[in-house]
Image (tube, rainbow, N blue to C red):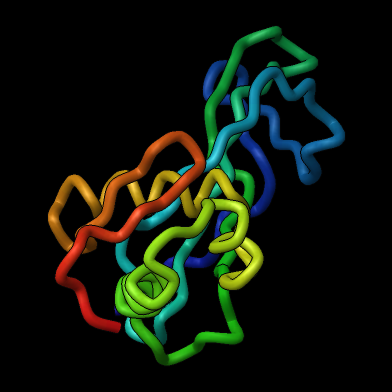
Length: 139
């Protein structure tokens, strides 16, 4: 079965108009999501979505406008293990420090930490921007 080709630009679901560039439409809101688990190469996918308005009919649409793979310097390594190792070694750190070490945004690191702590994959406590490792953990 042939692979589906990537989406070319934005298409209005109301009038069917096609726009090759984001600059042709009015962007109302932009947000991003990320995959909590890395892919087989150890990269985290960050998807950028937008709500936009069609300049022809005025209808609003929502689409993924970009996808970014983060952390190429750790390619082939598991982000959860890398994050846990850094936290357990430092015992106490900040989201900002982890962001610099992993070359990712603070927001992405913060969301990943909240998820991994809630799932019990990393034993630590998130106190605002401070990350404190639970006692009894090894590096």
